Image (tube, rainbow, N blue to C red; front, side, top):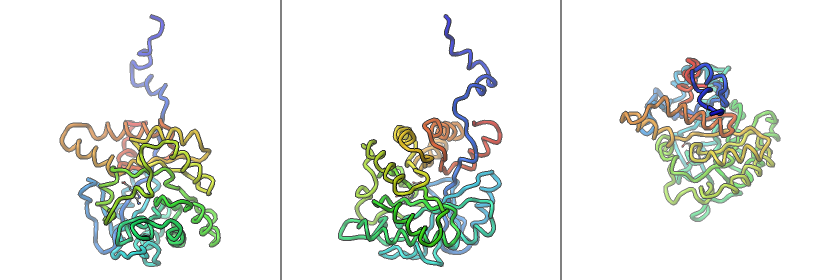
Length: 325
Ligand code: PBG
């Protein structure tokens, strides 16, 4: 036998020497939930190990992020009140706006990305303005502009629209530019599928739609070429980073998007992916560390430059300890 692939697998030194995919803490983004109220630091039942913080307790969470060596967070807000047009999403004293001011002041070294969407703020739980039973695209754009702008004014380093309205990247880019926020990048949830994997998030954020579902705006998961269309549209409209979401079940899409664009591509391993790992690990059926590492490497192998994951702090620690990467 001339060809013996096993030669390169004989010990850890040689295995690591020839490794094709390396991972780095710098590429991790940690999603966090901020909730209106005081003294709140509550574990989210559907997302073991993840917490909702009120603004006065947010520092506890951010401190851990910083200590883990993760330098970027994605903030989601849970407002005290909701209304039909989601006005809490752009209020000057809205939950995200307050969290940003506090977070930026106390943690100037952290990079704050905000989710720009309305579903946590609307009484009906949809990601835009209702017209009849549907979500109206163009009137929603105006509201999204206000949300993104108010985040930038409160100190966001980057905004990430996740609503899946047509044309929102161009709208938001224009609104930011007109107010002088030309240097704030947009990470668009460009290829976002209507997915059952978001269920634990919706429990965490109280953002499940009151009727119907999101298939009128989020993508049909049978489609890959449509994902490329969405990605290229967002690039054309001025996005700086394109995200594919969920991650694990869409790695084919991720790879194709990476090939089709010149922008960095991010992957979001969503709540349901994390919750499945936690649930199976609790039963003793899988090893949580092994699975989270394998999922992370798969995303980078598929072509991601950045990785949003609820396991970011743990992954960072395992990287430090040389167990991953
Ligand atoms: C807001 C938004 C959602 C997620 C990120 N931004 C929920 C949804 O679209 O229903 C899901 C994140 C996760 O499941 O971890 N639209």
